[in-house]
Every structure is written in structure tokens, then in C-alpha cells.
Length: 142
Length: 123
Image (cartoon, rainbow over all chains, first blue to last red; front, side, top):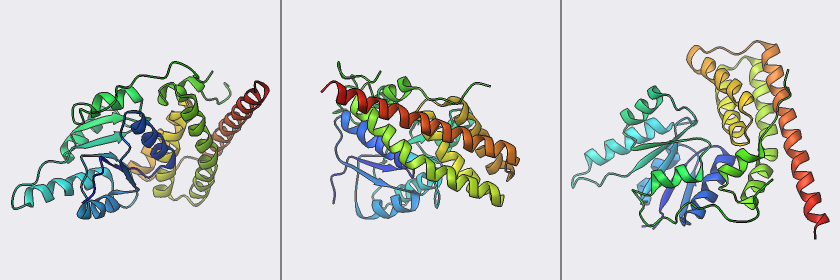
């Protein structure tokens, strides 16, 4: 059993790096990164985490299908598995897109590219031990 | 026509004001975006809509991160057309987009170069 806090499901290297560093700023060091829904489900077969952050559009298996399968597994669990929070990462922010996330069983939505404050606002209710998202006081890029 | 550009403030905001993180993100940008553009060019040349959608999606996100809103919006439009209708943009539009993204990458490289020069000058 692992003690990973967040499973990050994202195929874009820039977004992977951004999120890993942003999560570190929020006090989350234990992050496992995979590139699509198939890899995520395979990892979840053997490990546990507290929350999944998933891109919606990925090759192989997208975030919607991955979430549907996670929910199906939870329903099929004989003892009733606890609901794993799944938060969507998506550049699409229309109401239809958010509705698609909810229909797939996702719990919340963060617009890409992710902003530190928005990430904190969505994660904090589910991970109360987060560090506040305050920016550093010196060294800003000009 | 306005030259394609990027915005350091956008990167800084994504990085939460952390200059080190912002610079690392720009380093990754200049390293990872050119191969994406090359793959997009190839997909456009072959008329491979699924691949065009995939590459446009990836580029859309990267360009939005550096504040290149216009190019990101073009990628979004191309992605949507490729996914929903299986269509690719006409060659002039695809060529122009790839050229614009190349210009943005060059600007980011020059910005990073200027940052390095400034750091060395102030040591």
C-alpha cells in the first residue's frame, strides 16, 4: 500500500511539471504521475491515494472514461468502497464541459492552465492539511 | 496584424509569483513545444484529423500557460473541428499557426536569454 496523496493523470509534460510544482507549493510532496486513464486504473489496482487530478482529453483513455470506471469499481465493491475524489483538469470551461465532467462522476473542475489559488480552493475542502496558496514576497519575474 | 507574443505575467501568475518556477516552466516550454509543432505540421500535411486534434490540444494548453491567447484560441478552434467534424484547417491557416507558434517560442527563448544575462550582470 502506498501513501500517495495525489494521483496526477496528465499527458502533457509542461502541465505535469506545473502541477507537481504547484502541489509542492501547497505542501503536497507525494504525487504520482501517469499519462492516461489506462495507466491510472492500473496504478489504482495496486495503490491508494487521497485524490485524483485528471486531464479530460488524453490518448488511450480519457479522463471521463477513467472516472466512469473508477465509479463502477466503487459500486461493485462488496463492502462499498469509499468514494475517491476525482477533480477534472480541463481547458474547456463551458457549461456543457462541466456537465460532462459531472456526468462522468467527477467531483470538481479546475481550468487549465492551473492557477495556484484556484488549485488550493478546489483541493482544500478535500485535503484540509494544505499549505495556504500565498505567493512569495520577493523574486517575482518582471 | 499584431505579432504573436507571450506574457510573462501569465507565467508568473501560474507560478504563484515564484520566479524560479516561472523560469523552469519557460525552459520546459521552449524544449517541448517545437516537437509538438513538428508533429502538428506532419499531421496537417497528412490530413490526419485525430493527430491534429491531439497536437492542437497539447499546444493549446502550453500556449495558454505563457499567455499566448490568440494562438491558444486558434489551437482550440482547430482541435474542436478535428474532433467533432474530423476536418483539418486549410494549409495556409495551419502553416500560419505553426509559424506564429515558432515566433512565440523564439520570443520566450530571447526572454530567457535576457533573464540569464541580467542575472550574470548582477552577480
